[in-house]
Amino acid sequence: MAEVRTRSPGKIIISGEHAVVHGSTAVAAAVDLHTHVSIRPDSPRLPDHADGSVCLELKDMNLVFSWALSQLRTSLGDSFTVSSSPVSCTDERMKLIAALVEEQSIPEAKMSLASGISAFLHLYTSIHGYKPGKVVVFSDLPLGSGMGSSASYCVSLSAALLALSNAIMIDNSQGGWLKLCNDDLELVNKWAFEGEKIIHGKPSGIDNTVSTFGSMIQFKLGEVTRIKSSSPLRMLITNTKVGRNTKALVAGVSERTSRHQDAMASVFSAVDSISKELSAIIQSAVPDDISITEREEKIKELMEMNQGLLQCMGVSHASIETVIRTTLKYKLASKLTGAGGGGCVLTLLPTFYYMIVLGQSSKSFLYKNFDCYNTNLHKGDDDAKNLVQVFEYFHKALSSSVLDKVIAELESCGFQCLRAEVGGEGLEICFS
Ligand SMILES: Nc1ncnc2c1ncn2[C@@H]1O[C@H](COP(=O)(O)OP(=O)(O)OP(=O)(O)O)[C@@H](O)[C@H]1O
Ligand SMILES: C[C@@](O)(CCO)CC(=O)[O-]
Ligand SMILES: [Mg+2]
Image 1: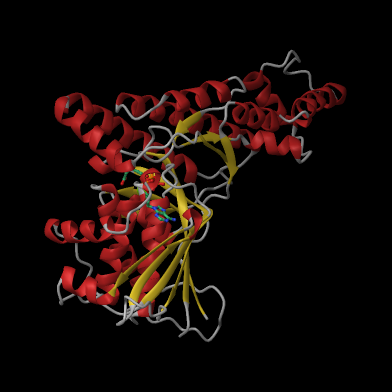
Image 2: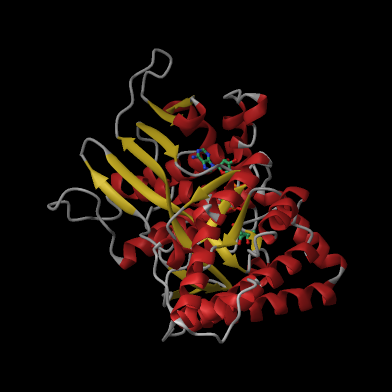
């Protein structure tokens, strides 16, 4: 095989981040933004790498790193693990890997990449051994922003390396992007978790799991339940562009937990209840338009409650609060997603917006929304004229597009708004 290519999605956490590290339930979904990895088994023989080398190109950052195979073997020792049984990076091995990364003189402003490069070296040498290879990585995801860039990087890398070393076998007769069988996905997921441990310190495993398997999941202590939303969940994602580091934020919550054990246990227990209720509501059948609105009102409230508890954990940030205040002006609820401390914020977009935009007016649906959106029209007067008036009210409000206004206001604060499809495919692989 000349080249293996993989792609795996980022994610949003709808509820339960941080608390999930401490055993609470969380709900997460894949988004259609991916990290892409390609691996070619051979790398060019550089003059000072006579026996071949391992090369890592981080395309988005315009950075290339390489290590001579002889140097890797000398530093890390001859033996490496069997790729079918994932192993953790010991403290001793981590020190050796850190020294190999340090030699690469990473630009000061990009030092946060060091943990990702360490994870790469652990995964590469553990799965593929000391064989030459050229690995190229690029991503649609904003890095270090709460959308699971580290997990999708580890998932795509692990899958490409396992395929290159024939530890996972895929029928390639169809060509194009292929899915893996469940056992192979499990194996990839375990290796990716080992990579995440190097980047995050103490990950719960939710990010790599949702990136590997896709869809929407409920996750608690490694137990995964795939869930399906009974009607589309639409979220606006706002990147505050405030840089943060998941490892430091997770450690901060653990420190707070050790200072206030009982109080934090109550916070985590409340988050557990919120995630369970949210998961049940997401899956519940919605017989009519009114139920959609009621359902979204409940989701909105649960997201607000979860944000309040994330504040208690000390992981909100002034930029996140600005997004929340801005969207609230339009009666929209927001919460941070991922590790917080900056990064990305989720805003629930009610179906009602889309119904109006699509021109689908339903009498019951519009009446229901009277109260929610405080029009000065009278509920209960159901003659056709009034209904048209109601519809026009909403249509006018939205044709000047509330959504466009929210986005414009958020972007005027220097934030970047992303629209992403939620709950799609997980890891995929392609051979050429
Ligand atoms: N495409 C990539 N190329 C190189 N390194 C990457 C890439 N994606 C992620 N990383 C590594 O992961 C780190 C970011 O991980 P971090 O966990 O802090 O943020 P995140 O995964 O985007 O957010 P969250 O964990 O909250 O979802 C980067 O600093 C880098 O080390
Ligand atoms: C903050 C956290 O809960 C989610 C990061 O996306 C960490 C984890 O679960 O590994
Ligand atoms: Mg991460």
